[in-house]
Length: 291
Image 1 (cartoon, helix red, strand yellow):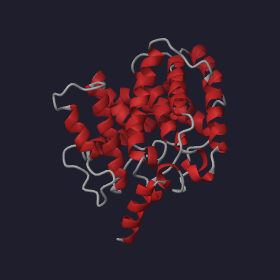
Image 2 (cartoon, one colour):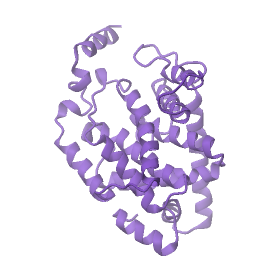
Image 3 (cartoon, rainbow, N blue to C red):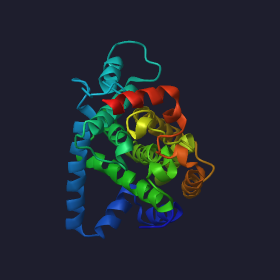
Image 4 (tube, helix red, strand yellow):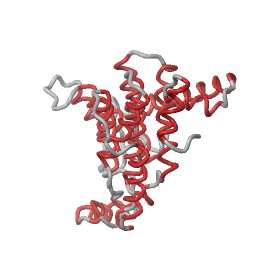
């Protein structure tokens, strides 16, 4: 694996590759049988993603606690209500799918942690909505997942995916960046477009704290999954429009690491500060943990 995005741009330019081409070559070491094995495994992951993104849209989540009950179903119904939407139907459907995956995680169903369980709704929602929009098959969609993997490898190399170390920027921020890079390539963008999209997504959430109520990965995490997929879609569009992050991707990742290191422990998944430290959160936690 290359160490910097600058090297990635050069290698892809020299070989006329997209990011997905590079990741597949790197993971397979050029072995054609290994490539087929990787693509088959990605197909399996996509099948799980599709199931999780649709699981609660019709039936609801039936979670025992009311913190995030039926958010996916409510948002899905709103997307198809015929009402004038503030954003657009595709984005609202993507948010509903992110909710569904997150609710699936809360129900202990099988999900793909991409890159973590706390950010599990973002990449699946982005990819499944893109497939619906573009009308592409699973093998083409797997290319998007390869891009997400490649972007994630760089983020992990510079920092962490753990909210307990870097705040929610390291979880939902990383997932949003991975999804943005994937969307940029799927919608016809260049290597530079994907990296700009990934950078913009991080810029938009830099400093996001991790403050789950009672240490339970439900609230506010569920909203950050929904807003994370929205951020990914917006960031991809901005990159494809020709805007770009003035600070390059490598330095954006380094900045995210530095910001995470500077966060106080109360804002890193301890359930002490931020929203977790409010009076309402205390009352909810008292009720939940006394049951």
